[in-house]
Image 1 (cartoon, rainbow, N blue to C red):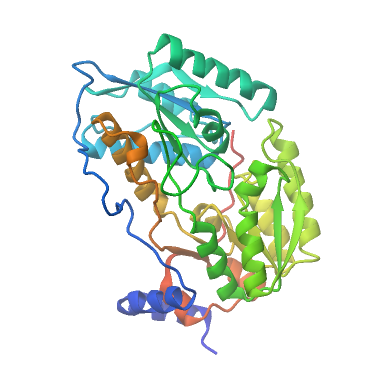
Image 2 (cartoon, rainbow, N blue to C red; image 1 turned 135 degrees about the vertical axis):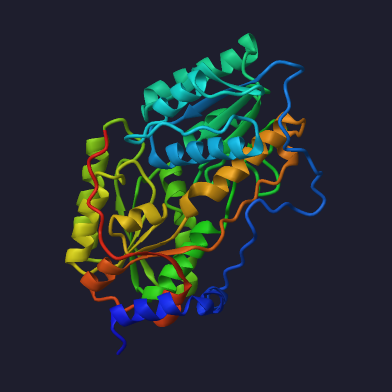
Length: 405
């Protein structure tokens, strides 16, 4: 048997075989990927060059269901993409803390320099993951869009925002980012059609399937543990329909544990997931770590400790960040760089006259596998050479995170 250290050495000195190894791995599990930002046949070509709104700046607003690290990361990379395209002057963004987008938006509205766009200071909305607050905030946004008419483009971040803004209650151009599955959650009709002329929703319908196929190929599990909120949004976040379909074709059972996700009490959400992990490690031989309110930088180290103690392999739905914290593996998002560029180009096309529903909504991330070697060692998982050769990001230690504010 080749030792783990020798495998790492072989990978480092033999990176030329990486592409071949990656293709072997991905082809054998039927992963069909497209390049980021690729268009579809027949899609009109729209400019992405900076332009004013008849001499004035385009005014941009923002709405999210609540603070979530993926929202912060995607907004950050979208801003960087706009800088690369020339819509904003290039500048160093402020260091972020916690999971909120408040600090970044405050900087954008006061410090960012642009002749073309304005991030409106009082147009940053959040429902704070409070159901009672949600409808009030959405009514306020819609009233503003229809009556004040001082917003030219809205960014909707996440499933709550998508469901609140993807409708004909208003006609303001709206781009929805960071929804787990906008089709199953009822935000859009299909990959090809959002159902609304003024709405564009980024969609990657095969992302969760790709992840689960990789995980199953790696581990060959028979009982997959999944924690999720048993609601329409919660099942969408966790890709339950995809998991159920793959369970039939790949002959594994689903071990479910329900918790509360979209709630303002984060400690309650976190404790629910921790309780579920303590339950799942006794019943499942693998766990899919899904996106939800209780999975964050505070709870992930605890979840990792529970899973690793019982030698249960884990796979992150979110990406490499959680792998750095000790989750065994994931398909990396490459630091959100590519998806941020896709969002920036979509904004640029709309401000250049494109109707949102004319633009391609399909975006499939490039294949980048992340693997935590320390966790592999702890749980006794011996990664095959083909997996090592296909992996883009290795983490040789488990990062202990500081509690987020």
